[in-house]
Length: 406
Image 1 (cartoon, rainbow, N blue to C red):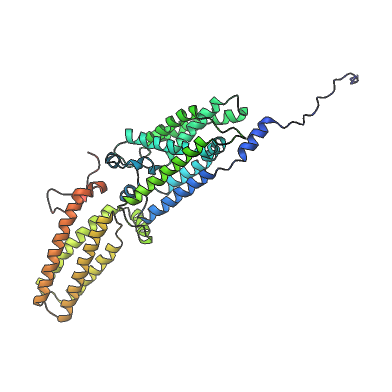
Image 2: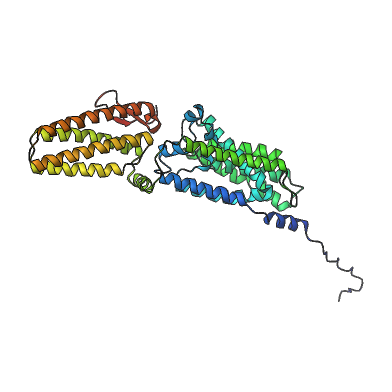
């Protein structure tokens, strides 16, 4: 039997009004994430500059560029609460954090607007460093992950706080949807010792607190002058922090040579401190070898071999990664001593015998080397601990690596 449609109700009229959820999302998507891009580029520039200083895994470079160091902060270097947010240790660290910032930073900046985003990012980064300062006091640390975890916390609160003010699917995505990501990353942080989970937790807690008191920027609304002034203050804090880094910089001078030396360090498994030790031990040995060879009336063949050894030592010294301006100056002094020994050996070869003026030159070289060694001992005693260096109390007294741990 056929159905009778004569009395079926008419279909509802098609609405000409746009869907409010669609309008909301279109307005949010239309916002630019300018400062997410700026912070990403700045992180990369800082990374390149640090690589040119000898490598982002080099402790002396990290210290010079403003990584978190409790001892330095306690000595008054307050800017180390800010600068570590833009420093990364190794390419993988930079890559992971850059990817996370690109994904999560854009979301937060588009929801909260650029002014609020900058304020949040700087404050959350500082909170992450403060967490590391309080609960990981021994280790050097750096990275944007504390700020990134803070942004996760902001989105988590956003989803729950604005359930009735934003499209339902958005609230679910950044509310309940973000929670598993936070938990998984915290578990990973606890499982891998080198990860500074104290910074993650510090940033996350700060993100939850700030997300609870700071509202997002409603589509179509203007940014208030208060937020604009606070944004300028946050950016000024970053600028002042890195100006302090430049004003107090005592690390290796950025150069292509130091970048290459840093790569060679990582390939060989040695560090700048190891190179420093090797340079000192080599100079000490060669001073002894030159004196013994010249005093023993060595043959021309022996002198030629010694000259080659000195030339190789000078070349290796040129490739030694630097630690600080003071250690650079000491390396220059050692290089000068090696060059003087090279010239002395060549002069003896030309004359065919050791003359009185050769003996006087040798004595002057030895005296100069002793003065440089005194300067090195003074430097190691004052700054060596920063690079894991100390002089042995027993034995030859040359600098060596401090043992790890207690």
